[in-house]
Image (cartoon, rainbow, N blue to C red; front, side, top):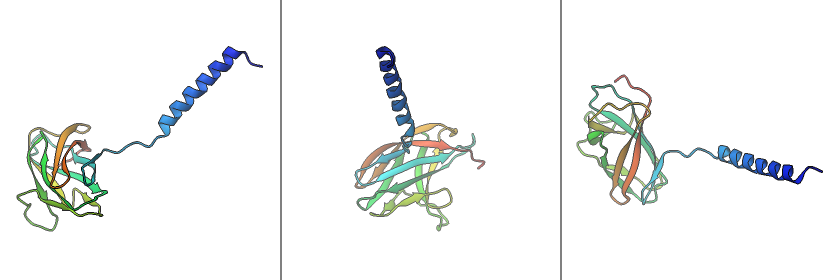
Length: 153
């Protein structure tokens, strides 16, 4: 029979090891944010050159409970934002993105996206910046804009 003190230490070590493994086994949470009407998943842009004036903002809207409209994008790294549709030759002058209920909408670099205008600084990989998204019905969402990967534009 093991000594009682060794047995209690062994139990403590097994409990601590189990707790540590339990935290490692949890899935990593994505950068998701919620409005009153939907989930906003991983707002991101690419790193930019020092002289870049614009950047493409990408993200996904899902779990949309009610038709809504994105009406504002505010971040300290840009002077403004506009909607860019891939099928139009000129970008929209405003930011009115309809988001239908029950569907998923993804903003991509080569497709529908938001263009951040008048960049205030170069966007460096690995950095995050405040991002405020305004919705017609969903209110204001404070999110983070992540800068991923480099760009040669």
